[in-house]
Image (cartoon, rainbow, N blue to C red; front, top):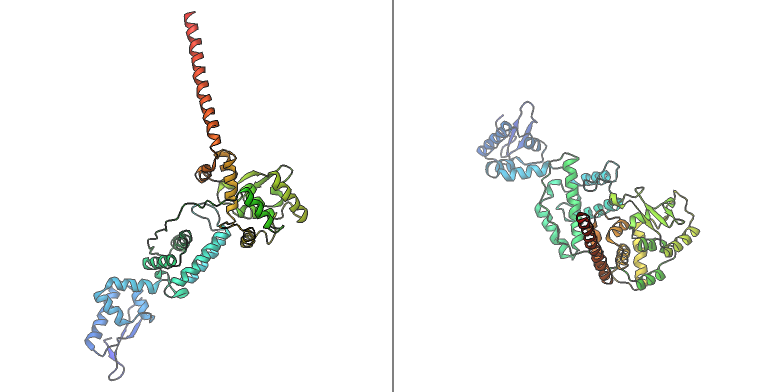
Length: 404
């Protein structure tokens, strides 16, 4: 049907129907019949090109006919961008579904081949609160709104606020992990913007001296010190310690077994046995006398098994002990540094800390005392000398046999 008017002076309308396509009955927003005819030809061209996506958006009233006609005639690349954005799914329901998937048994990390730890999911959730604040329409945005410009603006905004590079990188990781899930698990066509990570400084070097550790113990409430003391005297990660069951701590044998259980271990090498030194054994014995712990019960029941509660309690204890720049994870660093200072070999230290490779353990080796250097050099020299002398004696013995 050619363009028509419903009443004198009104804009022309177009009403077209094709088998297998949605009916399009739209205003051209013009009183110029020539322009209206041109719009009708555009519709026929779109139909010939099989552009059901554009025709469907027009029929649903999500695009204006005049806008599509102008873009199709002169700026087809821009038209494709507009169509992609209009057809893009809403982002908030997808993020909610992704976070629920991360918490499910079906979610396996491609990097570690293990389930996602609750703390990781919580961090992703916090990162997406910040992404919602930067998206053009907030929670009402669509997936196509995730562009290179958005990522650049997000990085600039976070840097302006003085956010640490490591924190920015965690937010960027939350975005890339979500986009990967959309593409691989949901089969959604995703245009991935190039994401450049912030340059992070070297690892933190904060650890506690013996005096600082005593001050921390004195400032820590009695119920919290068994947990903090375990982290300092064994080098366990916070999640590993909080996931221990009564059967994992064998005081008589002075041994703690770390294994996969309610808490997900960081790496396969994290499963290990660690010794219980005498000062920690005394603390744990008092803890077990105060808190009844069965073989299947948590060694550190609520609120001791909550990471955020532990971090708050540790922060208050550090403030009371006048310790600055210390985090809960620094108790693990404290163990590693004191091991190195005591001359524990790197291979054994790697096992104690549960590192997958020696690379992470090497950071503590610079704390190894130089007093061991002369001893090590003497051992090497003795080995080399013994080898030379043994070779000389063997050669002499062979020579004597020949002459005889």
